[in-house]
Amino acid sequence: MVSDRRREPDRLLERVSIAARAGVSIVQLRERELEDADLLALAKAVTSETGKTETRTVVNDRLDIALIAGADGVHLPGYAPGCRRVRRAAPTGFLIGRSVHSLQEARAVEAEGGCDYLVFGTVFPSVSKPAGHTIAGVSALAEVCAAVTLPVVAIGGITLARLPDVVRAGAAGIAAIDLFVTAREQQMIERLREIRLTFSAS
Image 1: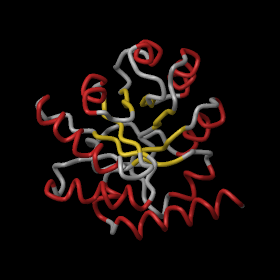
Image 2 (image 1 turned 90 degrees about the vertical axis):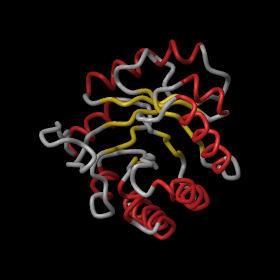
Image 3 (image 1 turned 120 degrees about the horizontal axis):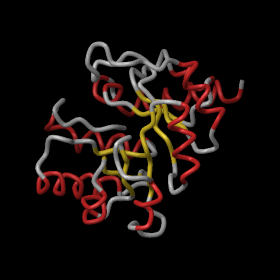
Image 4 (image 1 turned 45 degrees about the vertical axis):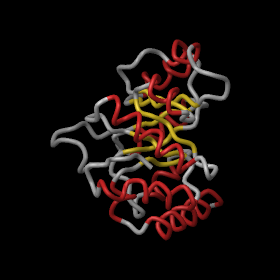
């Protein structure tokens, strides 16, 4: 689950709580417009919610905020310092993910080391991206999944209908904003599990 408090801001913590209880693996706090103090307060609140479950919280781009808030990790955008450098400043067991947008970038991040997972996209057209944004497609996702050993998470325009294609491409999981805003979270997450189990076994 990738957060976007601009959509139903009063329900963000409620949706995090529902998603965590339903078994979402990671909540990525991506709130770029917040001032540091507000981001820290929100990170602490989200981490408090997920801390009651097995769900892990990662803060987008801000290692300092993640560490102070007691979050489980940090998610690095493509322009951030390398994962190995960030790893040296992180405690043992700290989760580090990174966004990649090409096969070459995915290979380079894995070769550098220090990264736990990759988020690849934009796989499908997404309302959260501007018109004209590059769409990678399922075939590019499959190439990346086959080329690296790190878990690859697909992002961008993910829907229940598209999930079978994502699973067939070899993705370890999906990341989304709208999927968690527009659906009834618990039922939707259960359906995600059903689809994944079906196509993983086929």
